[in-house]
Image (tube, rainbow, N blue to C red; front, side, top):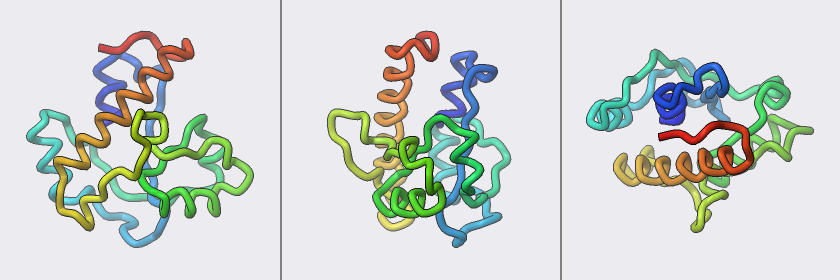
Length: 137
């Protein structure tokens, strides 16, 4: 979703967005069928993607590293030893910090989508206010 928002806002040359797993369970797998269906309903194109594992090198490469829940944060701290200052949860910067609802367990892709929208909107607003990006539509 963030990649789509960045591309739609014309920031593909300014921001680079990537996704990585904190645990090897789903390595090499495509996005879940429920995720693909929800993105299709929202008109968000699904780029070819296979799960990859977060590496310590990602800590040096990225300015911000977001997890979806506390379990992600614990794994990210282990993997990214030395880069902990870059780690936060996507919803930490919102008025109601919490874990993003995990559809793997809940089956509720609608709630996960809403959580992601809230987190991405807050992130984009913070980047804009900090002068790191122009205002996105």
